[in-house]
Every structure is written in structure tokens, then in C-alpha cells.
Length: 328
Image 1 (cartoon, one colour):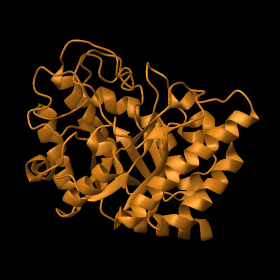
Image 2 (cartoon, one colour):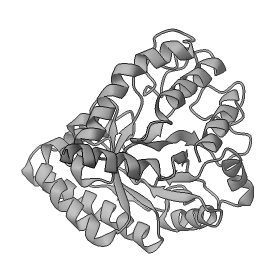
Image 3 (cartoon, helix red, strand yellow):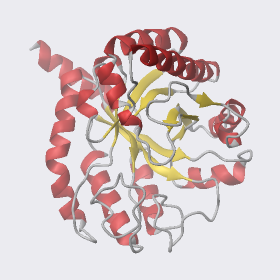
Image 4 (tube, one colour):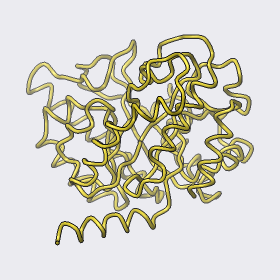
């Protein structure tokens, strides 16, 4: 009886909250003006992610460099604050998602120090990095803060550190928090119960055809969706796709995470993939919404010859606009 009550209460809470119809806004090198914000409004987004990067040379580098003059203006603290104000003025909410970038294809999920001394040095650097941005999020009334992105080995190997880090973050930042784990390791995070949203970067491998139909993609989603829903019910937390998206090229759903592949342009494959995702998830009460990867500050970005993730100036833009308007 008590379990049933909590499930009903959980569903009711999610049901009456507005869907997060978000985009991942790529940092600009110049101040963002109303001309840049207008297309975001026209696609009916009500949230954007801002992503200041910290840099590591390798997966075993103990120091994170960030907020430097060598970075794009939009990734600096000044740029983040001013960009966020422009979106806030238009009633668009902000998720701040500081994350690590490792050059030459290094994957953050494989971060691993050589010994305890190096782990402690790295943890101190990450704490400085993430608490700095937690304070920025608090000072500027950002509605959601993502405490890490695709750091699976780090969060599994150092659970005590993350428990203490979460406590420190919550003392600084009073808004909602999430953590963005990769599509193939999202169940492994030891602190899911401490989050407001369970975050997943949803690049799941789906249909293998060059141009799969919407129905074929939906079929592949069914068992994955069931597992995600089960996790949501287990922790009584809504699911948030902290990233989702598909390249506009052949085999778009085969390995959506592989940003380095280069096949022939296929606008239909991208559109079908996004439509299947919306059909499967956006009407679910336990699903909070998500952030589309990715959106540039360039008016003529994307286009009919582009194979990248952006939907700008492609058929998928109208599709996303339709769903985001429908679910606002």
C-alpha cells in the first residue's frame, strides 16, 4: 500500500511539472544577442544547457585547467553569466553542465589515476572545478546543475569521495541537481538516490539499417525503455536525457555516440531517429525531458549537406519544434 502511494505521488509530481524541452547550446566566441536567441525560441525550447569545459591532457592527468583566456568566450565564467542572462530574459531556464574534455579521443569514462596520491590530487582539482561552477550556478539562479558528465570509472572507483562532494555541492547550490552518465553505464552510478533527476546521455545503439523506419527504431527502444523506467521507479526519480541526438547521416542509430564517423548525408535517418525517441519517451510521466545535442550560435549552421548532430536548417528542426511545442 505504501509503495503504491509513493509511486502515485511520484508520477503526480512529474506529471504536473513542465517537460524539459532543452538544447545543448555550444559556447560562442562572441556575446550572444537576441538574433542568436530567436531561433532557440522558434524551436520552442524552454531550457538550454551551458557547458564550460575543463581540460585534461590524458586520462591520468591530475590537474584540470579551466576558465582560461585560451578558451572560447562562452566557456569562461564571464561568458556563461552573460549568455545565461540573455536566455533568462527570454524565460528560458538554464542547466549548467561543466564537463571535462580530453584531447585526441580520450574518454572521460576511463579516467584512472596511477596511485592513491594521484587520485587525491585529481580529486582536489575536480572539487575546485565543480564547486567553482556550483557557486556560479547559485549566484546566477540557474535552475539545474549537472555535477559531472560520463565519469563512470571515477564515480565507481571513488564512492566515498563522491558522497562527500555531493554534500559540499548541496551546501553551496540550492537548486536541482543531476549527473550525466553514459548510455551503457547509467545503472552503475552509486549516488542516484541523491539526485533530483537521473541523467543519461542517451546515445543507445538501436536499429542497424542505413535508413531505419520509425517503427523499427521504436522496436529497438522497447527493452531499453523498460530498463530505464525500472530504474526510475526503483529510486523514485524522474529520468532526464542530459544529452540526446543523432547525426544526419547513414546508419544514424547504429552507434549514435560515435561522433567521428563520416557517412553519406541522410536527413531522413536523423528525423526518423528523433521521432521514434519522442514517441517513446515524451509522453511518459516518469520522463522529465532532455537536452538535444547540439545547437550552434551561427544562424546558417547545419543545413541540408551537413552530417553533424545539429538539427539547424534541416527537416528535423521542424519535427523538434512540433514536439517541443506540443509538450510545453
